Length: 471
Ligand SMILES: Nc1nc2c(ncn2[C@@H]2O[C@H](COP(=O)(O)OP(=O)(O)OP(=O)(O)O)[C@@H](O)[C@H]2O)c(=O)[nH]1
Ligand SMILES: [Mg+2]
Image (tube, rainbow, N blue to C red):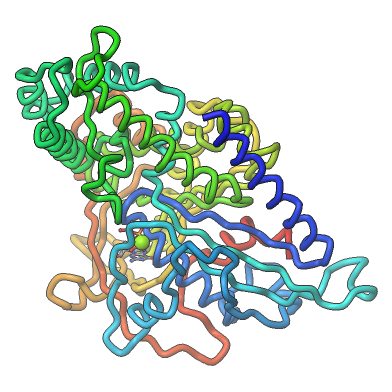
């Protein structure tokens, strides 16, 4: 434990030194973390951001692009040889090819380096030539951040807290029944451990579908190449005292410790601790459509995610960070092209209120945060339609199911976000008015003018907040 944290620190200090060497050589590196819960829009966001930084015709809100100071942008080999590369070309081909479709779901960390040749602004403009700024974009599942909470818990603490939560939830009934026949002090038996882990994983999966955000350990839901390995074969057991050698309980304790040191720690050390700027993508419209409980859950998840970025949150993480920290965090409500622009201010107000609330809940003081509603890829057009004598602001697009063209009015969002969040917080199970419909549109075939990236909404504003000051 001690040795590995010293080793972590050594790795980090060497990196800090090499980062400052390259900064001194005028090739600054910005590491941009892109995260969000499953299906929040990470892959589409990164693909469209990169395409729009390569061809900047639709990026007037990015000041350096607007001023014509970005002379060139190009993809380069990434610095980390062991992290999968973000498959930019395949995702872009999916979105903009002749039969456009949404990219496949991605379930692990990936990375891409985009380098920009930028002429300096202001006083330095006449004195210095252009310099290269590297933008390293790191895509990782938001679920993994929630595991930070496990780091300062023992197995006994974790199991007791988890079981207390499970007892209040009907989704856990099956696991709890299976547990009632188990003696934690009996000899460890691998098929039994596996059956328990399977039962616990099944509970986590149902809980996530039901909309709970506290579905940790995160890797149980997104196992990747760890599926079936002992680090993922544990489950909470009732603990009444010290464990006996060779018992099921002792083995569970050991695997929980292994999960922390071999799964959670490397993620925070190799990825999280090196991020400079962060964007957290939130499918707010999807949650509003699912109902008040999903909104309440999203509100809590945002606070938990922000909590991971709170300076001093965790002694172990602090040592790893060596004083370095993320200094800007953007919360972005994605898929805003589901709404006519008349409704954008209401969505912006909701994501702003949620972000303020997450700051308060996480007692967050540190980085600058901002909230924004955007569409990384705009797949709709706007139109006004008369319905029962009323003008409705609609969006038109190709429906994902059936491929038909349709105009669609999702319903009214409340002008006052307090109304929505208040109902969610007070435990309402349905919205008072007609509710809010979500529709899934397919990407449409597009013809891009030379110099233009794919169409979007406010992606340039997001880029300005995240990297504009460093260009
Ligand atoms: N209309 C619209 N839909 C979007 C947009 N971005 C994402 N979507 C929808 O959201 C889905 C998920 O987007 P992804 O980018 O794959 O989300 P992700 O966060 O990478 O998902 P995972 O990899 O499964 O975690 C897509 O298949 C689209 O249906 C957007 O800008 N506009
Ligand atoms: Mg993805």
